[in-house]
Amino acid sequence: MAISYGERLGRFGVMGRAGVLDGGTAAELEKLGYGAVWIGGSPPADLAFAEELLSATDRITVATGIVNMWTAPAPEVAASYHRLEAKYPGRFLLGLGIGHREVNQPYQKPYDKIVEYLDQLDAADVPPTARVLAALGPRVLALAGERTAGAFPYLVTPDHTASARAVLGVGKLLAPEHKAVLGTDHATTRPIARAAVRNPYLDLRLTNYLNNLRRLGFTDDDFTDGGSDRLVDALAAQGDPPTVAARLREHLDAGADHVAVQLVTEPGADPIPGYRRLADALLR
Image (cartoon, rainbow, N blue to C red; front, side, top):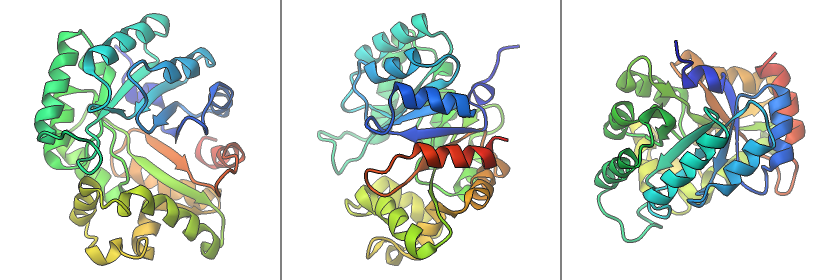
């Protein structure tokens, strides 16, 4: 029987951007026992950074979180996927997303763009099982279940995970992202968490995220002044490693296969010591 992506990824992975991640960091995370490294932002279509991380490691899955469909042409992404798959078979997962109407122009109907892009990948022989879709609302979640290995929801809560699992059904990968700040004093951790939630999601009023948060019961009052405490605490786990680990496991209890942990620190701080501390609570 083929190994599912949920088994390949393990229960917990790490999400970061270039500048936080590099080959040495990915190798350290692999040694700590994390199952995947998710490349945040919008990596270029050449996927050169993914190749750098793959070449520096032996087993860990490298995933994009996410390739932006507006800025990375599907034919180029497909060629890059085939290059990586030939060199590192079964270790690369192509995470795709639609971006934001506030920053991506021209902007056709998002659903139509996703379908068109997936059609192009089909034509270039990128298998559905090798790609995952950034999905929040029910319609795109259903499409993720039909046309890809599953969904990579971003900026969500365990309640969203439960509803996403109901839409996806069994047998599809569900790998939400969740932020975390280590520290026992909320007066210290909450401002760090708030900065990560506010910029750019609240500052730019990114419609897809705000609409999803409204579906989860948050209101416009929660989006003002950098985000309410209620919102910030829901989107960023805070506390000592056991407390943060317990919050992250709520996604697994709600139906997730894997959680992409994005550790948020003071600007310029090295997150690896935090991931090392968190690994003892998450992975042992």
